[in-house]
Length: 245
Image (cartoon, rainbow, N blue to C red):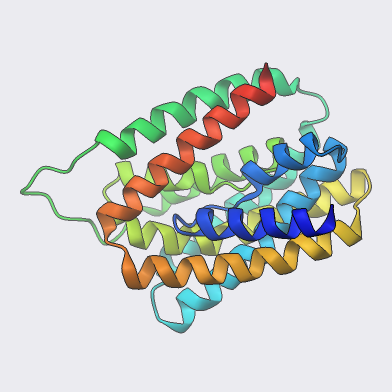
């Protein structure tokens, strides 16, 4: 099973890093289907997000792709609210949360596919700090509640505000590790972690995400990244629908 987890974590981290989104959203339901308890799968998924997106961020920082000024407000509020989300998850039915999340993912996925800027519009260079703080808080809360990264919230909202998709991918890859790690620490404090599986999946996650980020920045256009984000979001929705029913 360890080899299978390594392969799955590598492939998922590679694909999801193309859009700057952590792979926990697909890894958690896969691990559950393999017989890993949900309370163990969530912290493993969050930790994989932390290490895999950290590798992607290092690559982005090294090649000067990251806008730190926009990333900091997202990090602060997502970090705080991920702790809150992880804690209150034990009091809220997961089925109710999943229904709301599925609806949002479907909307966001189709928005990425069909939303087009007017030809006279250009991508904006920044977003107000208040908006960034609200986005970060919402993303962190969702990350903690479901045991997944907040990139699936951050990315579509920032696209709606007019930011370049490749810039979005770099920012989300920078933010996701912080919200994921705070959520991981909270789940660890509330339960147990399978450190052997976590170590295996983390190594695969770092390798897959670093390779995926390099491929995205060198070989894909902003339009291609946008389509990849749409596919990722819709895959998330389908996976959660199966998990729900």
